[in-house]
Image (cartoon, rainbow, N blue to C red; front, side, top):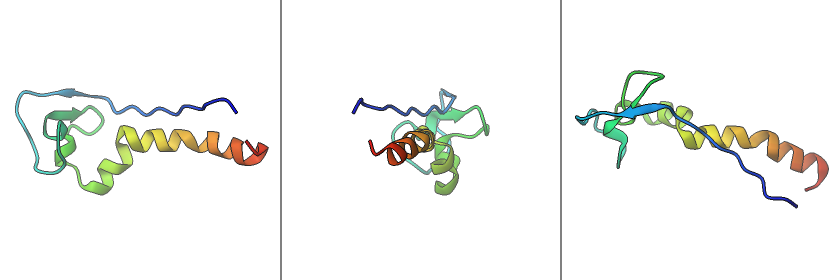
Length: 72
């Protein structure tokens, strides 16, 4: 079976001052274009819904469905 790849993207920009108290790493300085807030300003549920990881998981669903349908 050939390897499969699913990617996720979350557009934003690095800002000079930290905003928010949630998250870790770059979260306080990563301003999301979509919502106008940093990752650290989001509630965990919203962050998990729009993060690059969440988008990669969603993009993997058709791949997984195809694998299940064809048996690999």
